[in-house]
Image (cartoon, rainbow, N blue to C red; front, side):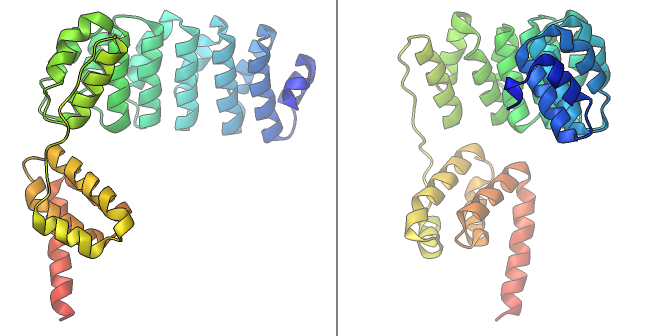
Length: 309
């Protein structure tokens, strides 16, 4: 086992022929906590193997030695996004403020994994200068990145920016804002109470959970959107009995998120999913991104149906 080997043995393995052995040695050196390994791990950031470079970056983050900072900043230019993400994480753990502008730039990386790591690293750095950059990222990111950005804003005390985001027409932004407010403590309480009246159940639920963590009982309104009898009938026709409840829950959640197009598209989505919950979930995601794609799929379906008559 690597953890049972001495530091000199691990350093020898770090220079060995096997990339797998070098990666394991780098990870073990990080776990050992011996900062004497730092120069060797810095050198490993230039290893030809991506797995070794990633392990070296992670190990340098665990060791927390500021000597690694300029080399980790250079690793932010690596062609592999996994190494860039590990370098960002390491810079966050080391906590050297000279990394700040580079972490801000990593928020705009083309890969979501790097963006998420950058948001978390900026929160760890604790530099309030990150707040306006994270606030702008609320409008420029999506999915899990958006939630992580909201979380980071909360950790940095960006209550004003998060309360403003609660007024967004985009439900994803409001959800991220509530997650962030849940990290901001007592000063966020008035805004969390406001979020209890949000039109989206997920936002209301997050707000209630955040208030409960502060010891404040906060019931929230449960989902009220109901499917039409026609849609329910089609679900019962197409879906196996054991999956119908799941399909109904997915569609009710969708109706709440897309009040503009949901009623018109729900039946089409059910038909197009052909009794598959996985297909139903994918089509709902597509509808939320651009409802016109569902209309296109529906036209294709109708033409195919017409040809088969």
